Image (tube, rainbow, N blue to C red):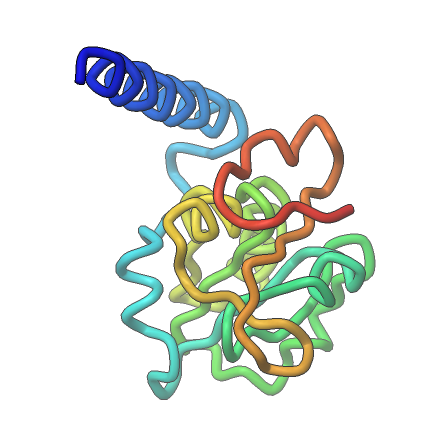
Amino acid sequence: MRYLLLFITLLTFTAFGQSNEYRAMLKKYYSADFPTISIADAKAKIGQSNVYFLDTREKSEFDVSHIKTAIRVGYDDFSLSSVSHLPKDAEIIVYCSIGARSQTVGEKLIEAGYTNVKNLYGGLFHWANNSYPMRAPSGDKTTKIHGYSKDWGKWVYRGTVVY
């Protein structure tokens, strides 16, 4: 029993330590004045009309997993023409692995006149770490997630990281 309590204590300490370290890392990449949305609030919006999820990751990342209904717009190859069909007043939730690339794309959308753009706080890594559903290209649920690189993949601690 003593060892079980010690194990649970260490596990809890480790999980909170990763979470605090992750939050500290995110602060380096997020602009304080750019709107964000929590993963819980975003999850509740999946499938709602006039709400669009834009995945700003590259095709190789998107093809591993993504949020249901997400439209891949990319980052390196992002073009405003890829979203020209979206209403300027629609709620747009941008995301990437952690939120840095998506914030940049979100800023471009706001500059182009989109009025309700939010960045998914913590990105798809945070989504996966909370065991929220992701889809493979087939539409089937998956726990696989593209880790972007070995340095970034360390932030995923739930799911199967692939590169």
